[in-house]
View 1 (tube, one colour):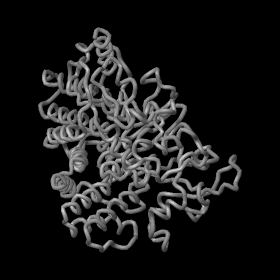
View 2 (cartoon, one colour):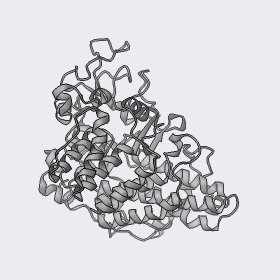
View 3 (cartoon, one colour):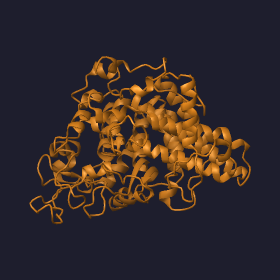
View 4 (cartoon, one colour):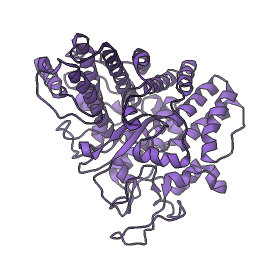
Length: 508
């Protein structure tokens, strides 16, 4: 117990830092004492910004900077593995063993995948939010009551978001509402976690603005009313409260703050994050030291020369799968998303020269088509990449509302929102009105529209259908928890209340 208390105190010291001038700045680690750090409004502003920075790091992945036990020199973009890799849609053209193990749900044997089982950074985010909520009531210097209320709301939003993300990855997870929790905490049922997330969103929504001052990119990288409503809606879908989810998403739609941009506008969305379609995103900036490490940005693994120095791909969607996912493109090339999301590169050109993009996005055969939804400047650098990672965007909300309404048997409402997304993509409107077929089509449309945006696995696990698309997971295995990641050994240290997911007790 003594060691645990010392560890917690050190954690508090590490997480406390000075304020930042710009929202997206990641704060330097600081060793000031807690009493010194919580005196003015700027201290609270800095603490909230630090919490968002930790959450961004949590999504990008654990590194040696976070725990010496990991073998990684840099972040891997774990949000891809958690949300996409096991969907059955991806391959590794250069036969990378770690990528392949992820696809096949072999999540324990490969040491480089072990950091993906560790929820440390999500709980560091949560503890930072807990500190803010504990300290802010007594701080009045440089902090108006209005701003104090807003910062409290942001802390509730991010605390809910971190629990939500952890629950989608690991299923049952601990609920931590204390800044200094030195007692062992066990895992709570996923249902209870999602109910807590809804409660956090409800606390946040009334006091959050739709937008902050500054650029849209900065505004949508923090807690807004739209982000909190989207979080609530997603959590309610896991709880099968489809009416509540539909109501939350209707409020987003009725705000008129967000809209579907044009197909050309999607390029801006994925390149810069400055888009009216974005509701909540994490923006990674190499100028702030993010993604400038040895492994670069996970999204560089999708790209090759001329975007990076790579001569071959590590991650891709094969041609046969693209044609399966996008049947209208296979039929008459009408789906505009295929040329917008995929590219073929002329590999006949020497890798030392700037390779041109070919006119046919699927020209390179089965295994060498580049997933180009997230692109970078064509400078062939590998390590550095600025990029937004969209968490919630308007197309996601339209399709999720369509699913909620379809499950409530409001088919006309469901088709209206489904067809808004299809219309932008240039494919025929969907007119079938039998409920099971409509629900299946909405899930397929989410697969098409949100490919590579880290939603697909969560959608399949939520509806209990991951085993239908991943041949390495059985129906019984999914019931036993194969859709969730195993819990890291670190979580069991000095914690007799921790339990491993049932499936992973027998599948080492």
